[in-house]
Length: 246
Image (cartoon, rainbow, N blue to C red; front, top):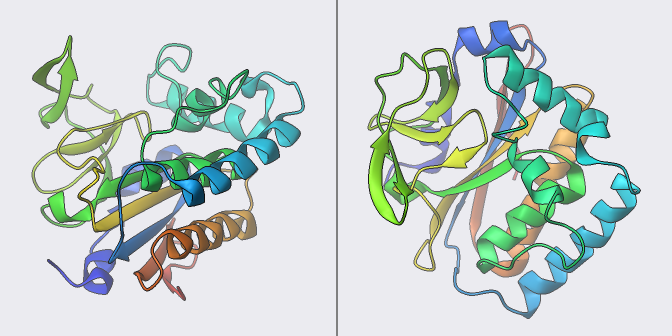
């Protein structure tokens, strides 16, 4: 597998995406030496604490009333998506928060979902070992393959032309910025190497985005002591970009 620091250096955000939202920036976090598996006491503790934080931050409002989520709805509309039908991932999570809390999926997914709802930002996790080449955020031409399921069957779909998607050398890994991940790179119980994508738009501040990355790193180290974490911030060319301390 490619060295994580070299792999992160190859990650990119296309200029056309920055033109759409100049305020966009992303923290990419890799973790190697992870221990996956079903939810356990540690992942439950972290997710339950995040649910309490999220409920306090939401304060009884509808998710779309939160400024951080309203910004993502605007971003979806900017490339032609309808956020009422295909919601940003963090909004979809917050809508499932009450009354019973989020579904428990697996210990890695539960921890990155915890960071997402606590910090009110979209956050996805994928198996880095399933990637071919580094991740790139682009505006699709419509020909890129996206492997998913429909009616319980494996199918290949294609994004709309101009849609903002994450991709690697094989195809689309996540459609509509952070709406739905493909099957090929999904995290499973066997995942030991992962990449996590933390998306930021104003009014989420630079410091708040980095704090979310720090919380994710802490959670991963709690789940898998000894795992090796690297991270990189990518933003518009006028802003700083570089490798962050892990």
